[in-house]
Amino acid sequence: MGDYSIKDLERLSGIKAHTIRIWEKRYGLVEPGRSDTNIRHYNDSDLKKLLNISTLNRNGLKISKIAQLTNSDISALVEKFSENPHNTGSQLESLYMSMIDLDEELFEKIINRAIIQMGFERMYIDIMYPFFNRMGIMWQTGTISPAQEHFVSNLIRQKCLVAIDSVVPPEKPGAKTFTLFLPENELHELGLLFMHYVLKKRGHRVIYLGAMLPLDNLVAIEKFKPSDYWLASIVTAMETPGIDQYVKSLSQALPGKKIILTGLQAEKLKIQPKNIVVLHNIKGFIDFIGQL
Image 1 (spheres, helix red, strand yellow):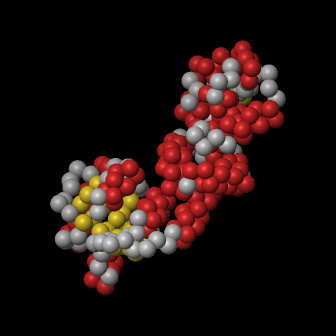
Image 2 (spheres, helix red, strand yellow):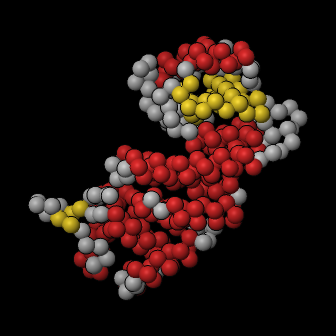
């Protein structure tokens, strides 16, 4: 499905374009197509091979040795390295390949093994967040399709729901109530689901409202079911009325309530009303919860 420039391969594999050209010429590791003007272009097979080569090279194999291996040998060695719970780079590259190929079996194998070895929370922080960052680059450069993004997002969402459902801790003394939501036109739910898991695991109460909540609905819900904290993730750019105006309206709609905001757009705020807390990453969120 993919059609990549050499710069795309550099961004996605971490291998410098100059190095890729040398490997092509010296070892024939990939064979790019050429445009009418002699510009290199690559396909999914080229990207997957370079991801595998990157894994092996990072784990100590010399390129001259890798060039002598068959594709089956390369795949077997990558599988071996991805079994190591401390080798997150190899696990990430296997996940990229599962997304490119729409390979649910490979995705499940990598994630389930990581959950067993690391636990769900550690797996999500160490593997899923770096994976999301790389997936964002692939989306911005047009190197993955909506189908590939939806495929892997739905699999991750299923994992989150299972993990949330499996946590039944005793409610801790002084437990707080958190209402979680996404604003209108916001559909990126995975980060919010993970925060739901983190809160529930630590003994707090969660009211999960999900995606695309109009502002007036939030006011009605607060009157009906008050919370100690409101929590939203804002990833998608807001064109109208804009992130600053939205946050100002949100602050005024829920006066006296602590509102926690996360996500790429929240980090761009030029204003920060007194009842708004912006947390820049998952570590900041976990630290914040730990202080309650």
